[in-house]
Amino acid sequence: MFRKRYDQETIISILDRLGIKRGKIRNGYIKIHCPLPQHHGKYNFSNCSIFIDTGIISCFVCGKGHINQFLKHEEKIKPIVTLDFSKEKEKKKYNNVNKDGKYKFTHILLNPTKYFYTTARGFTKEFCEEFNIRECLSGWYNDYLIIPILDKKQNIVDFEARKLKEYEYLKRYYTSDESLTILRQKFKDDRFENKLDENNDLVEYLLKPKVLYQAGSKIYSTLWNIDNLDRDKTLYIVEGTGSLCRIYYGLSKNVTCIFGAKLDKQQIIYLKEFKDIVVIPDYDEAGSALVNNLHQELGEFKICSIKTEDTDRSYINDIKNAIKNENLITSTRYIYYLYYKKIKENNNGI
Figure 1 (cartoon, rainbow, N blue to C red):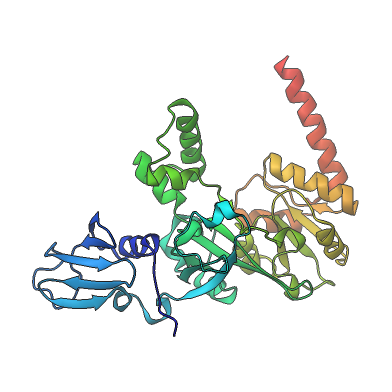
Figure 2 (figure 1 turned 30 degrees about the horizontal axis):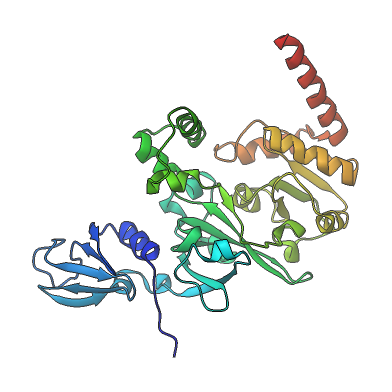
């Protein structure tokens, strides 16, 4: 019979999420403010602890309970994803690794209105439920969005893990309400100039890559939502999953993304199946690289070039206006524009 077990990261993440104050971490348990409803003095440290291994809350005053009783029915914690870690070094990082070398982590249904990242990018509850987008509660992917990437043709069942609490953590670090872009830049400067303490849990999380994939990930060989895309309709392509929800509901359900600027042969095969393609690149170097790489493989296609970021309210309207006013440009013209812009910038710098 399978016995459900948790790890320290899972329990701490749930406690923080529920607003249950915690104290010292001992060998196998964490001191907490008692949250049990039968406790007379609400949220007191009255010899109350939660056992990391089982999730059981034990209070000297009012008895026992379980952390799951504070979560909604659909949020009950259950292991649903299995990861394969091929490298021995990666396996040793975790205590919760099975004998066969597979690591199980847990995640729950995501409430996208709780976090800046998902709110700013227009993620809705319906979108998260439709594509089974979850919030990870343990392991290396703790506090990340888990975005499934499926491909029946190639038998790919994979996922992208994207930072969820980065903005909230950066605000806590700087006590600032500035944009995520500015906060990231500040953190980058601190990292190199002041040599941040990498042993700090908060700093360690912020130093992690924005996007993570499991070892041996195959998502670079496919496209997001590939099984549901209509080859006879215009395909809209964005860089990364951050813009997907806004375009899916605001512009077209025939939207996909490239995972970074590089292209796999199988991705090219898929893209050549579509009659009409419009690329909406990010207004940065990575976006330019994506257009250039696509142009080399596909030849001419259309570009919707806007300076608006996917976190801006006018993002979809700016795209719609560009399409309506026929302001889309060819990939050749876009590349020439970038080329001459670079020459101009270099000449100004001399």
